[in-house]
Structure formats: C-alpha cells, structure tokens
Length: 150
Image (cartoon, rainbow, N blue to C red):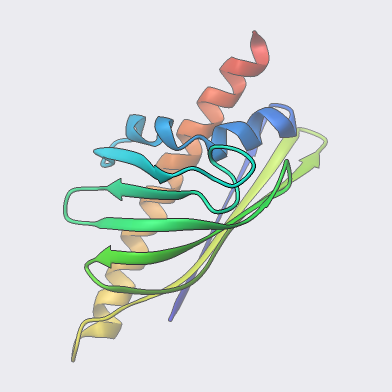
C-alpha cells in the first residue's frame, strides 16, 4: 500500500475552500480530468455524505463514495471501483484555519492490483497521483480565492 499526502495553504476563508473542494462539477476544469459526474446525491446535500461520483481521467476511471462529511473541516471518501483496479482503503481532505487562510491536507492510501510488478506500478502511480493532487489543489485554490474576492 502507498500513502500520499498533499498540502496547500489557500488565502481564503475555510467555508469557501471547503465548497471548492467538495464541488465535483469543477473537477473537469483540471487538466487530465475529462469529466466528473455525480451518480448519486448525498443524503443531506448534493456532494455530501453518501454521494457517489464517477471520475474519468482517460486511462484511469474510478467511482468514489463520500464516506465522511463534516462541513467545513473534513471530507472522506473511498474508491469503490476503478480501472486499473486499485485497492483504496482511505481518502481524506482535512481543512484548518491558519493565519494565512485555510490549510488543506489531502491524504489517500492505495495499492495497484497488478500481478508481479505491483510495487513498481504502485510507485509510478504514486508519482502520477501526486501530480494530479497538485493540479486539483491549485484549481481549488484559484476558485476559492476568486470566490472570496467577490
């Protein structure tokens, strides 16, 4: 299994940053993400607890379920299905107010199910995910800062 943690401080209020993180529709603005569709609305709010979304990144496709939702501090998810096949045990986005705005800490734990070369693929996939998380957090920051200025 591989653990990846990405962080970013965004100069915007925590509520605005949380909304930007939770908004599935804006993920398609991120390079390498073709689409993100909500296939099940959350129990209390659209992108909240119980929501299921399908993300298409070309070679990588996955269906994730929101398994924890504590506005504006935490959102957790599990990847239930994917191509290529992943073992995903945990995903969490945590937000905290800091003097410069909002700190985002995004952690995920996963493994790639590929016989024989799995560890090598895990490492390569980890690098690709680290790049993807950076792109997503940059997009979240851009949108949150723009929203905070309105």
